[in-house]
Amino acid sequence: MANELVPTPAAALVSAAAAASEFARNSKSANTLRAYAADWHDFATWCRSVEQVSLPAAPATVAAYLGALAAAKRKVKTIERRTTAIRSVHLAAGYDNPAAHPGVKATLAGIRRTLGTALNKKAALTAELLARAVRKIPTDLSGRRDRALILLGFAAALRRSELVGLNVDDIERHPKGIVVRLRRSKGDQVGAGTLKAVPHGQS
Image 1 (cartoon, rainbow, N blue to C red):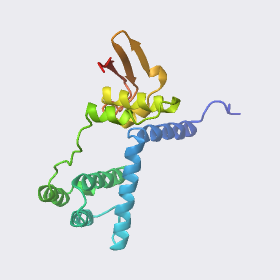
Image 2: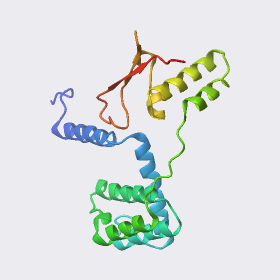
Image 3: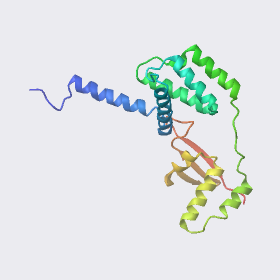
Image 4: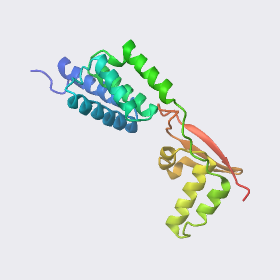
């Protein structure tokens, strides 16, 4: 009688495949996966509206979709992300990437050339504007917390995701300021960790 505590080769393979699938999902951030899902939904919906197959999609279908996005004045970054989502879904399903076809690449290059890829940057937050903003925050306990988060985010130049991901034990006091430990950031997707020094302010 087989020992049920010892996994059979088939059970071990299923377990290993499940673990591999989980690691594959963790190769991209949750925000990226959500964006890809929304982008793929848009592509699949468009394909149904024009009676085309979305998976696997023909290169001509992808090129036509990108052209429709450009004609609708979608941003180049949005069109590029939709292209990446189409690629990812096809590869994950075991199909060739239709976006790699020369015709699709030429279409995307033409869109970039026509619409341009210049970023519409927002005006930077200055120390003066920051000071005016924090003066409006109440002085109760939650207000002090909010003020500390805003000032720390500004002083350490943290992204929103980095700021909300901080725990109290990620901050260490130092005679010249504080040291912030970022467990994960956009530039550190594998979670190696980063230390940021924040010196005391002058005012």
